[in-house]
Image 1 (cartoon, rainbow, N blue to C red):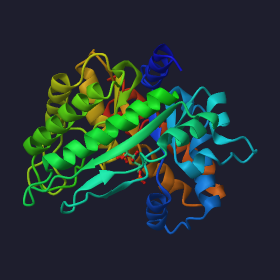
Image 2 (cartoon, helix red, strand yellow):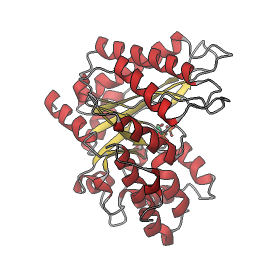
Image 3 (cartoon, protein in one colour):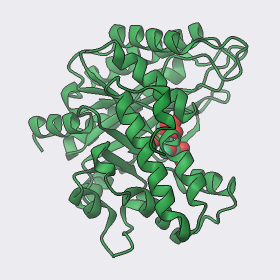
Image 4 (cartoon, rainbow, N blue to C red):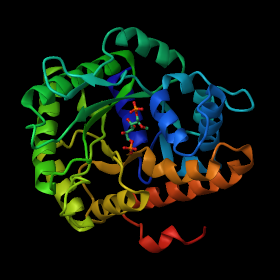
Length: 342
Ligand code: 5MM
């Protein structure tokens, strides 16, 4: 695939008012999410849940692409249509998580590095044949001020792996989503989140350049700059938007077509409000949109609850959430839209 083709896919992923649904929970993660609602995590239940989300009527107005998990990309909708084909027929790009998870970093102490580079060239070839157009790799950067985390070592290792993955994707014809996630669950304040995210993104862009990744054919999926969940001082929504924008202007070259945020455990409303406040200050050099997992799915999953009788209602909830998140991607969201038309 040419650089122009990759750039066109990246542009489509972040087209105005559209964003990415992260539905790539590994079996371990979806089992945890199901477990909290007493839903059994069988292969059929996972398929039925993903089918509910992906076949939501009209979802293509708000969702440009869906990140699938290895099991899901091989599954089909109730009528037998493989999920990638079903998405394509709705004008939604199928994507695939290609990392194999974060593991303890060797000779370190509780920090993580994401694995999955071995055999990745061959796996990419197979995913392309299954219909994937883009990929995702998530690096986990932990803040723990007492332990001195993150170390430079952890940031360097993760940035290097992200760039190696990015280069392999572009060589093999997939647009890489580059996801360096600075975790939001520490006790740190917003200043520490800013400093760590700055250091991480600077290192990531250095590695991307060193490893010849074409910035026009990628999408960045960062965390927002936010107070840690365990911090006694919580920054206001406006401060989160301002500090996140300030950081992005310092780190992300204008050649990157779009930034699709992760939600990272923020509630759906808060994640939506933050994105909206950033877009109200636009236009920016890059599109600012979403690649949310929990913030798009939580309410729909709670409604579905593992029962086919709830599919229509869960789809209504999924569609409403996606429409609000889409509004935030154009800076036209307001809190009263949460209850309007439900
Ligand atoms: C959908 O969740 C993904 C989880 O992957 P693992 O099961 O391998 O942990 C995750 O990577 C997700 O794509 C991003 O973190 C964004 O999701 P949130 O919920 O943070 O918006």
